[in-house]
Length: 304
Ligand code: PMP
Image (spheres, rainbow, N blue to C red):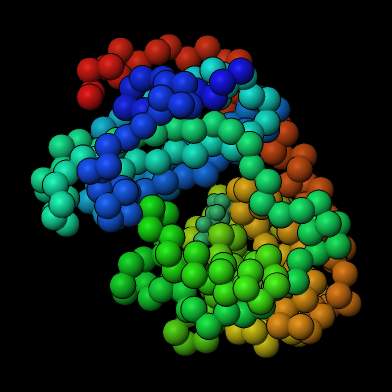
């Protein structure tokens, strides 16, 4: 089956799915996006993703031309049309077509794009044996410059850090902020475990409020761990029993080595495995089902 892409209220086969070269999403990275998972024909935490999309859009003063209900329908319908049981959804809202100046005020109307496909971020061995990561010189950008809480279409900060990791022979990189605090990896949140304590950096330091992060925090609290969102440095990682990353595409990945030094005993930890097992139970039972009937929104074709 050819892939089907949603663009501005209509569905197109992949080969015909095109947007304007004058779209400010392309010209300036002016837009916001979400990466969302489909597990067993259920879209995982769709509402949370859409709420974060609207928060990101609000921060960049972008008015999404569809409502949450309309976007829910469009997301579910895109997955259905692609015949997917499990997959990865990319929802992008760009500023839309404008001229060659920066001003978003001259852009006609934001564009909404939905792609439903597959994703594989790390090799199987990363989940079984854990990942080696390094701290890279590129810092997570300052919260005062562009809040990293916004999932914007401009990922150059993360891409440069990722490249530094890849060029040094590792698949993932740890990013610090300008005060030396651990923030996150290039596309994933980070956690450390020490005894009954589970730590993750607060979003105020510049970490994205990950949907997977939120889920793992809830799971760890339910299991009786003392979960804290507080600043820490590389000291806490070197001193930890365990470390892991979380993300929609990555899911839960053990980190077993930082800067060529083993973390904990250098093997994926027991707590990481327990949290991951519970996470897997939740993702297969929690979500917006593709099989539930949703009426096609009437307004959709009139928006563009
Ligand atoms: N941090 C960054 C920079 C990200 O891009 C992502 C998403 N890939 C995450 C953290 C994890 O967020 P989520 O669990 O919502 O995917």
